[in-house]
Amino acid sequence: MEFLGQDRREGLGRKAHSRFVLVLLILVSVLLLLSSLYSAQASVFKKAREGVMDVASPVLSLFSGPISYVNGVVGSVGDYFNVMEQNKALREENAELRQWMNEALELRETIEVYEALQGYAAPPEAQPISAFVIGESNDAFARSMIVNAGRANNVEVGQAVVDENGLIGRIVEAGGGASRVLLLTDIQSRIPVYVEGVNVEGILVGNTRAQPVISFTASADDLEPEPGQRVLTSGAGGALPRGLPVGVVTGENRGDITVDLYANYARTRMVRVINYAFPVVDHISDEEEASEAEEADSQADAASEPPAED
Image (cartoon, rainbow, N blue to C red; front, side, top):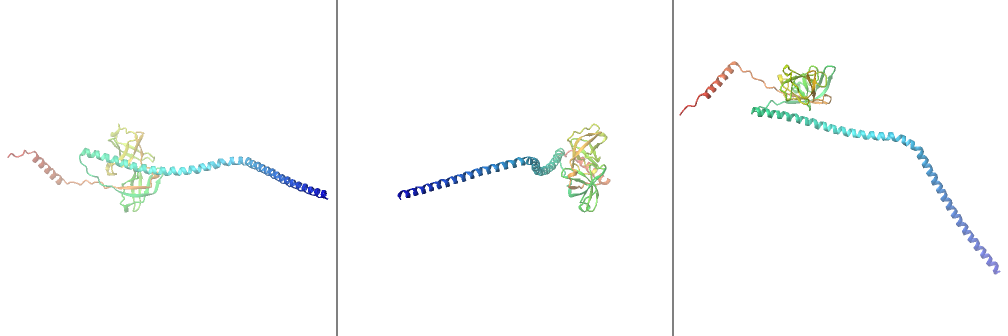
């Protein structure tokens, strides 16, 4: 009986050990199976990704060019507006500096005259009238502008019209609230001018082109202005104030001097009409002239007499 019980216990022990080994083998098999499946799945996903990349690569290459171009255009547009703002600021600064330059040159010329004459009488002050350009009339021959200032603003025919750069023309028609400005390039425009540094004056003649010409008098045959010299209004005939900047000499065309105007009509939006009161010479009658001559002679005789001795 003891042997039977011992065999039964040994048989049960072997069975339990076998079950443990079986369970352990099953667990190892499951782990190996999961590992192989994970590796296979990772390999499948990797291959799928590689396949998608291979398929998408030509498409991405096709669209990368337009996308880069669009990005470049957008960046260029931004740079363009930045450059436009900088150019606008530089143009405003240049116009202001040009105005200061013209005033400084005019002041220097005035000082030279003052030093030469040892005396100075201030000219009449000009009263500028601000106006906006509200219309233009440009055809084969006519070159003119309409401004929103007229007789109600003390605008009169013949007054000079300037912008921030220089003279652009003169008033030829003055209505109640608007006036017409004849531009320097109009074929009917005639403005008395002189070239700075040259003693001979001339007439600036419009020719419907961007650069009018100076027609000099017969006494200016030997005159040879150099390019870059300034052209100013001469004030001859009392038509316009003297010294308004007009432009610079650029060269010669068939015996006439071409002038590059300071004014840029394409950008002219605001102008000033120069309301300038020219001095009037009072007429002296013959009697007053004779009395003044007698008084001057008496003063001269008194000055020429020797002093009385004590």
